[in-house]
Length: 486
Image (tube, rainbow, N blue to C red; front, side, top):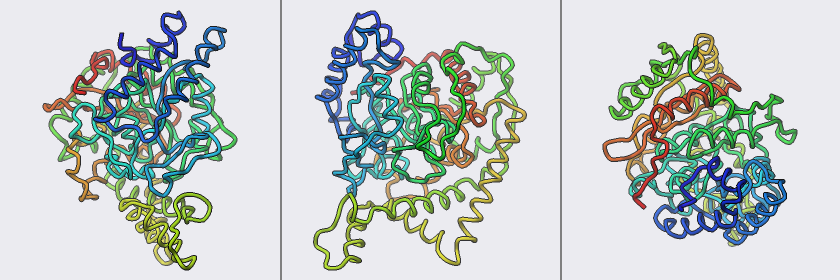
């Protein structure tokens, strides 16, 4: 049996019934990694020995009846979350040899639940990108066709799940970085409400936008992971004291009485016909499942890209100032003066896209320009948030495409940053407003590449997202499809 193809909830039953052991499962996934990793290139750091030791411990706990919600389940972690005694590179040369002395809160919760940590997966450098091609250690590939991008910045997370190189993964989403690669790789990806999941131990890109979330093979697994990682954390000043429901219970409810809004601004000119067809088919299935479909408007959508690419780089400029070659990370050893050391360490340690965003952000925050750029962007951000609040007075969730197009070929847009930025046009608004959003596999392009449907909800309404997503998943009945191309 190919255990690596199964879901968390399927494996949970087998582990609890002692039909398989955690060690057996972990070895099966490691064998899968050995077989396909040279094609997918999802991992930056792999720890087979550590994983097998964790699996042995999981077997002991299961035998003693002490197993947690994820006991024995092999997972990958995006390389932007701190992991004790395992290097955390953020996909950057500047942190190539950085080993944190502690675990991120989300990682602590995964370990306490019994998950087996296989290693750290690839990403755009400091989560800045939409294709994972900005990774200093080479880009991960789309398992459905390795000539194509897997999306970003959580590309390694999505690719490792889609290629069955783990059972589930944690990623981060600053402007679509969970939902977009999930869509391109045919897996489920959820960006929770800002404040739902602790950001402690997440290496910051844009602090008011970053959020940790799960990438999984189906909606049930997504709900299971949300149960594990959600909750208040006093170590994170942005964490919200909000009760955490059992997200899995929401899946059993139908869609009777649910109103699903279709934002007219998201079905834009230039939307790929295959993406629109898949989205419209999904909306039809949601209607047939009992939901009421209503057209709504988010009038400030046109400003989202401009606002995002002022707010995010400004916060990145501030957050990345700490990488100066002094306390940790890469340091140029050939400098004669302190200023030279700063300049050389940062210019050699950071990649082109990170430098571009630092420059944009520093300019936007500079004397004489702060009010004209960052302050004005923050004011429009408030208007974008107000649009969503108004819409959620008349509907429960919103449905739309995740991205304007399916995945494109590696290298196709690498020298066109504006085109890359525009690929996030349908996802960045959720980060600006702090609302939750999920990508659900909903079809395939003529080239056999996955397409996702995005469902967004009001603050702390992940249950409604999961409820709608589960009903769509069951109606489409394609969630069990995995790539056979590797």
